Image (cartoon, rainbow, N blue to C red; front, side, top):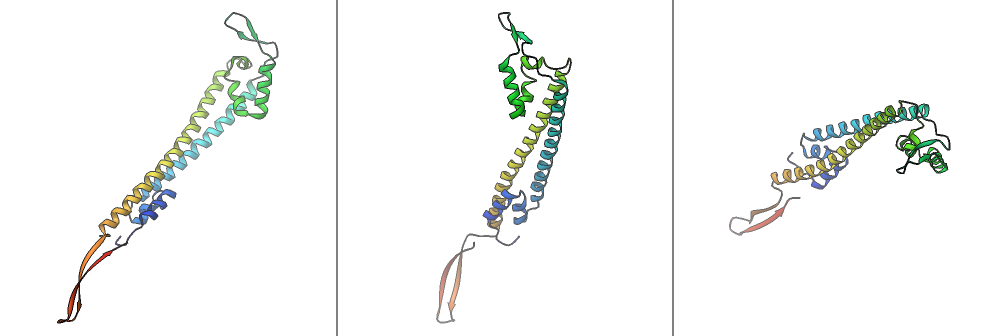
Length: 197
């Protein structure tokens, strides 16, 4: 620990791999940052995998329990009391989403009245619960990634400060020294200013 440590290196090390800058300086708390990093990524992976499985589950459930309404089927009543029927616009939209945008497809069939009438009786609630579970799990995965990013920033700043404090404790700075030059009768005094880096 009696050797100069580069604050720049400490910062970069911990920015890339939290905790390594602290270990470079000689601080054991670097293991804490490494631990937080490992837990954050493991947590993100767990939630992502669980969320992806839940997505597959609700998609398979929808494929088994939702059927597109027939053109002309009654899908509700407008504010004036007139019957709303399933039409070409609704049909074309859901067909497009089914072929080109699965996310919108599986969202819309559980969201809009002109599609929700296509569900088998009593199944829509279960479907919506599965979607909510999947979204919650995937959001938790994102939160864990955000925690990892914060860990990088905090660790990098902490490593920088640790390196600077370490160097100050070594007396790195400007030092003034008196040096005697020459012999006993023909000597001189020299004031030397030096800086350690």
